[in-house]
Image (tube, rainbow, N blue to C red; front, side):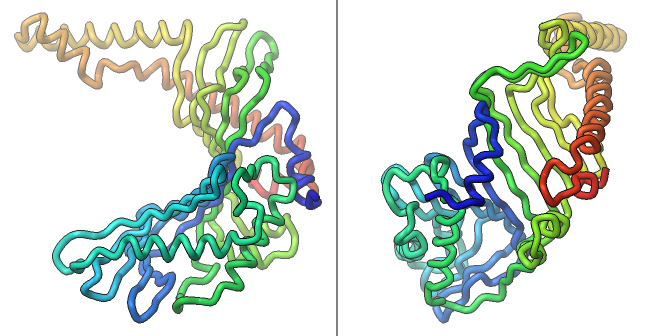
Amino acid sequence: MADATTKELLGRLPPVVELRDIGLSFTLPRGKNLSRTWSRELRTELASRVRLRITQEALTLRCDPPIVIDALWPAKNMLFGGADVRFEDARIEAWVSPIDGPGEGLVDFTADAKKQIVELLAAGLRGTKMAQPGYDPMQDEAALATLEAIADNFRKTPSTGTSDVSAADLGDPAIEATLALRERFVHEQGGAGLEVEAGGSIHVEIKGSGDLASIAAEASNEARVRAANLQSITITSEAVTVVHGGAPLVELVEIRVDRGGGVALSRMRLRGALEEVSGLESLVRVVAGVVRFAGSEVPLDPGLALAAAGPASEATLVPGLVRRKIEDVLAEGVRKLVREHASSIPGLDLRDVLAV
């Protein structure tokens, strides 16, 4: 039976949009003990970004950089990099590796550490849909209830050590998702517009600067969003193209929308006529380089090779002009979109959320 919240969330996706994965990440500060017993400490030597991601195939947990397992000598110290739950066969794997070097211990206990982590995760999944082989989270209409059941299992699991980590330590939260279009999308106005090919995927990451404790303490979605203190939305794709007269001009690989409505086109690729103009600029720069080397009495062939290989040969004027123009247009479009649809999400005013 579908839970109301999950059904509502799934219902918000247009039929042509497929959800491929969804994730949550946060930062653990350095020097935090996640779990301490008489025989080992699980702690962050450096600030670690913890990422939890769900796809149709697996649930993955990653810690970057890995979390240190400081074991009682003579056991070797270890690094915990994360774990996977594979839905096809409900298999659980933990990623633990020994630390080699002076003072890091002598005996390798990574197999025991992996076994303990796998058992802990298995206890958390026990009795839930995710523990059953063949589970598909994208088809689970009670996905939130499944996750809540897993969280409840972990809450009931007896503690194996002390911890100095609280929800207030889990900072800079981010939510990300990958969407794919089942059909080709084209939006043109006045001969220019955007195109996304069928099957093209779009990755969206929403970053905040709050902490999970402050977010969880709020009673409404609007208050939680405010507590998250949204900083940016980054869209990454290999499938979004600016077209003019039906011809591709620029591939928008990565776009970041900052708080306040500013837009940065972090990565792009020139296509068609613009690519030719950019190539012409590069050619001019190479010729100028050859002339410069010739003036320094460098022979023609080596001078040509040096000029073509050097960073000075790369086109910068054309890409720079294109980037600034697109950023200006997108920024105005974002601001207009937010103002016109400020109340499109019930309980939220997007103008306040994005400070536009």
